[in-house]
Image (cartoon, rainbow, N blue to C red; front, side, top):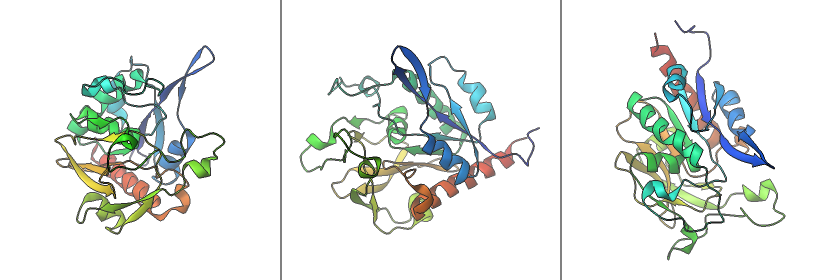
Length: 256
C-alpha cells in the first residue's frame, strides 16, 4: 500500500544531449522546481534512452509533466520530411513519450504538457504539426528571440503575444476566460488537431495555444507557451501548476 502521507510522484521526461562526446540526460531545473514548489509533488526524472520500462514507471506515477525542449518532434512521426535539418531532433525522447502519452491517456493519469510536450501529445494521439509557422501566410513568428545572438533568458521568455481562451473550457475554469499575454519560444505548432484533443486557446493569428483531452476523466491540459518561466511571480502559472498538483493528489488517493 502506498502511504497516503507521501506526496504524488510526477514523471518528467528528460532530453538527450551530447556534451563533447559524452551522452547526457538533461532536465531543465525550472520544470522540476515548479512541480516541487508550485504543484506540491515530487518530480521524478524519466530517462529517455528508448530502453525504459514505461509500465514500471507508470505503476508508481501520479502524474506526468511533458516539458519543453530545444528539440523538435521528429516529423517522420506525422508523415513529413524534415523541413529544416539544422534544427535538433530527439528520437530517443520521442520513442519514450509517444507510448507514454497513449498509456497515460488510457489510464486517465493527470497530464500537464508544455511547448514540445503539447506537440508530443498532439502527434501521439494522431495529429500533425506545422514545422515553420513563421513561413505560413497570415501567421506571425512564434519563435520570439530564440536563436538570436546575445539574447538573455529574460529577453527570450519575454511576453510576446496575446491569446484568447475558449469560454467554458478546462483552461478557462482554471485561469478564467480573459485574454492573456504569453511568451513564445517555438517554431513548430499544431496543424491538424488530434481527434481526441479539444482546442482551448488560440493566438490572434489562429495558431492553437492550448489543448485538453476531451474524454479524459481528470486533468489533461497542454499549453504552447512556457508557464514555468518565473512561475512563482505569475498568477496564471501558479494556478496552472496548483491545479495540476491537486489532480495528482486526487489520483494518488484513488490508488490502493
